[in-house]
Amino acid sequence: MTGGNLPEQSRGRPATRREAGGVERSTATPQMPGAHDATDLNFVPSPDRFHFWEELHDDVKAYVERKVGPRIDWWADRHKRERDRPYAVVLGPNGLAVTTPRVNAQGQRTQSVRLDQFVPSSLKHAVVQQQPTKPRGALRNLVPGRAGTPQPAAAPPPQLNLTQEMRGFLGNLPLEAQHRLQTPFLGGQPVKHYLSYAYGTDEDYDAWCYLAGPQTLTFASGHCTRPPNTPPTQATWHLTCYQADIAH
Image (cartoon, rainbow, N blue to C red):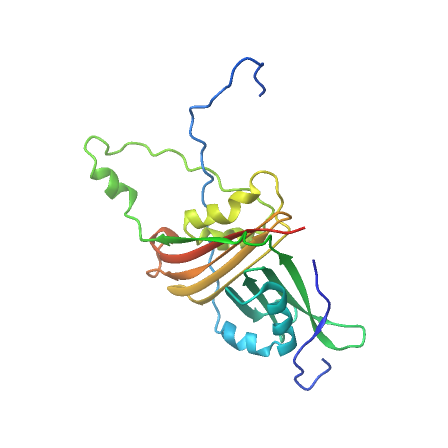
């Protein structure tokens, strides 16, 4: 659902089936999806989220809070299309709001607000942590008779309707976080819209993202540190993953 256009702060310009008779039980453990390949997050010097939040008009911020409740987590950044204007993503107890800069028919700068309202009390969260892993070879050498034992092939990552950029962003997150974000959409529920944001450097950064479908919304935010020139498995992460049911 999309809210109306709201005024933006002016800056000197216009604003297989089994036969009956028995129950078939599988003894195999379902294979969980694998991780996406991580891509470079391409950090560039830029003001932080607080700077862009302050650029939003107070009326926009007040409207968002009325609709989704007090901010639980959020980010704000320079919009990819309107490079001199901000957008914001706000997670509250009652919903998720995403603002987008627009220009109305009168030539005034406004912010449209897309809202995903939650089923009351459906928002849940879980903490996900990751510590650097030991190289596989070192682990095998600790187990007698296991040296050189071939490792099972990694499962493929989920094939959701996401851009390669978004898949690469997810690939930087711990595998558990990737599962929590994507599992609700593996049974046929489509991902309708999504965004991601990271701020910092390759070795020390904060990250946020969400995926939204017709019935479910998932959101994650956290902090990462990683030694230079190492893979994502060598990163230290502390994240919070959220999930909520969307009201209709």
